[in-house]
Length: 126
Image 1 (tube, helix red, strand yellow):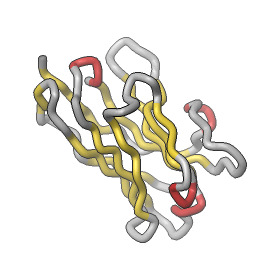
Image 2 (tube, rainbow, N blue to C red; image 1 turned 30 degrees about the vertical axis):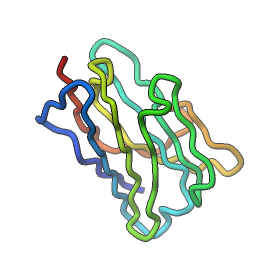
Image 3 (cartoon, helix red, strand yellow; image 1 turned 90 degrees about the horizontal axis):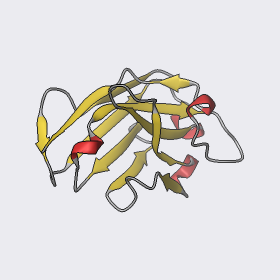
């Protein structure tokens, strides 16, 4: 599956602001994938942000974003979303969407996701 992320870019969001990211997938099998969002800040390793199961029956978040970010999906539109509220400067990173073919669990490790989008920059100003 090919993924295309959007919603970030050159815009700087002030601390406390909100931003929504989208990730659209090609193909007709989107609903069979677990979808996730990861992020990578300069000089840091890529880290898990959120994941959503097939059929959206379950979602998981890192402790750093829990209560502020919401992941959702629209299988009719082949799109996964990440709504980010109460943004903090430490949320500044390149955000990546990813797809996993996992069948029994919702993975949170980047190694368990086989398809990746190109990344979109999110910058939160202090």
